[in-house]
Image (cartoon, rainbow, N blue to C red):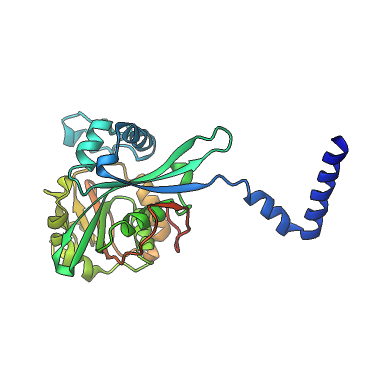
Length: 296
């Protein structure tokens, strides 16, 4: 047996020397942990699933900004992590039977366990203006260790393609890379400010997302009054009164400012975007895929 084992080792060494780097890459890739993405309808989202989402959110979403205590009667503490429990997630993200969840998991070969690395909660509604369905991304979270690897873009692609008649998709987010990821999911279509201005109010009304029901749209494309004293004005924002810390956001904007057309981000506001959507039908469990631009 020892002779056979040694012979096999020599044979593998010979193969590697024969194929060189190509052979080594093949051996290494064979042991990469696979990532899978799964669609889960509202009625099948259990408390166990929500607990995993809650843990990922609480550890990765962000921290409260300096103004958070002022706008919450000191219930929120600046620099404390933004947290959501199971009950609150269900109330906020699964508010009707057209809500759904897409999760991304990575499998560990060491213990055969699945680690949640990202998720997105969504809802859909009829959108008669474009003779199809609107999709709204109500929450998008990717673990810090897995950002910049196309996870967000893949989650959003699966969300978009899970609705057969999707014609428009949107989100509000303080994170510019979430906007980029949604662009990737929509075949890298660029941000169209006229399209946003034309459909913003109707999409909000159609999707009827609770936390957006009282949100005010502000920015130059909505003909609102100037909000800053300098020349750089907000372009497309929703005033959600969600006072998260923006240090990470400002750093991200600095890196992409030459191609960022949505302007600055104000405290208590989030970027507002909608894109035209064309559904491409897939299985509701996907392997990982890469996106066309850098995304979280």
